[in-house]
Image 1 (tube, helix red, strand yellow):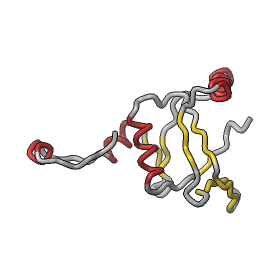
Image 2 (tube, one colour; image 1 turned 60 degrees about the horizontal axis):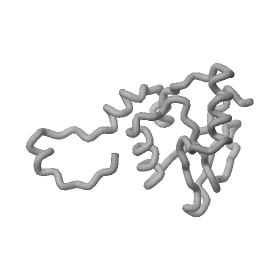
Image 3 (tube, one colour; image 1 turned 45 degrees about the vertical axis):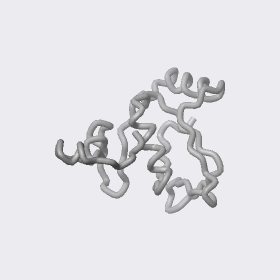
Image 4 (cartoon, helix red, strand yellow; image 1 turned 120 degrees about the horizontal axis):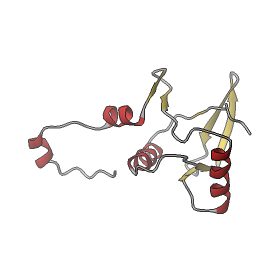
Amino acid sequence: MFLNLTVRCALFGDYVNQVNHFLASGYVEQSVVVIQLAKVKFFRGQVGLQNVMYATQMLFNLDIPEVVEFRQSMIEQGVSGTQPLFIANEGKVLSLEDDFMRLTRKCTIEELQDNNQVVFF
């Protein structure tokens, strides 16, 4: 088991929306993210993932036996249920709450009443 392995990913476009939607769902403890159809890259001693021709899929907390078993093994091995987000380009760790406050658009009540923007949470 790779307990100390960190995989760095740079997300763009719809992948960012998927992660934001997942984080907004509130169910992020002992999360298991299944990534299908991605390239694993090794660069300067670090592991990274790369999209494959827009075919890569991210699936969060699937209700299948393999994910349930993996999540249970994490609990048994004492892997922390909540991991802070690491923003690679800033070099610091943010809690989920801080990340939410940083990424959430702020506006006045008047702007909120006039808002007709469609947003997924």
